[in-house]
Amino acid sequence: MGKISDSMQNVVDEIRSSTEAQGAALEARGAALQELLDSTKQLMRDVHNTNQTQAKALKDKLSSEDKARLEATRKFVEQVGVKVSEIRSGSYNHVEQSRLERQDMSKTLKDKLFSDRRVGVETTREFMDKVHSARQTQAKAFRDKLSSDMKAGVATTREFMDKVHSARQTQANALRDKLSSDEKARTEATRQFMDEIRKTNNEHRETARKMLGEIASDLRQASQMWAEIGEKKIAPEAAPEKVVEEVEEKPEVKAVPPISNREKILGVVGRYPEGIKLVDIGNELGVNWRGLIVDVKFLVDEDTVEKIDNMYYPKKEE
Image: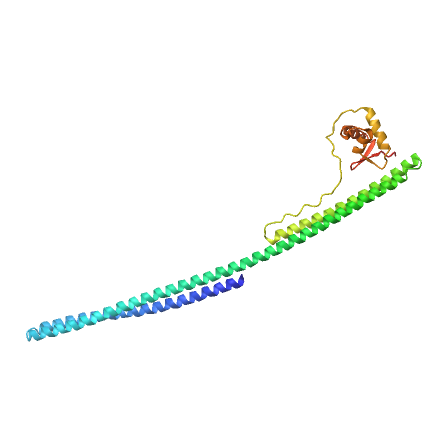
């Protein structure tokens, strides 16, 4: 843009210099014309004075040779008339020539200004097209990179969650294999193992939360960088949602369920120290799990059953 501005300024300076030169030439011609008009006026005054002098002399000589005097006067008047006509014709021609030259100069100047302006507009348009194309290319590359990084982050998170799920399943299977020993020892070992699972699960959750926080921070930085480019803002893709299987529960209902249902639920949960879902409790009791929501909620509130995510565990005795 600086080069275009300098080029346009040079063109304007050249036009101004040309205009000033042409104005000076016009002023010189005007001065010459004025001088010619002044000379013509002076000549006319001289002719007038001469006419008056000659008329006076003619009057003095009217006493002699009237015919010869009249003839001489007529010839003189004709000569003066011819000179005046020539002067007037020359002045008119000079003025007309000056007018035509000024018209030609004005037309040339307008054509040059129009041509230079059109060239400047075309140059500016080409430059803006190049800038727009470059910005579009940068934006596309940035979007592609952002999409690639986002996909990589999502894939890493999913892989991590799959490993966590696999580890929990492996630990649960190992726990089931150990349930052949004494009930009390088995229960105690199960509780200790569940504590380890919960601790490990909390660590995995914290690690996943930090990872998702880093991804969200990268997205915010990317969004800020995109806003600084000047093009329309690009909304960052939503961070991957943490996939956690949960059981939809109905709103809390403050009702007193039959005690027999609670005892049945406690018995089923007690048989599964590794944890059991609400759907599986319903299957064990042969009822719809939705009808057990109030009972299970009451047992959790009474701290008789412990709920972690969507799994229910027998309460550990302290």
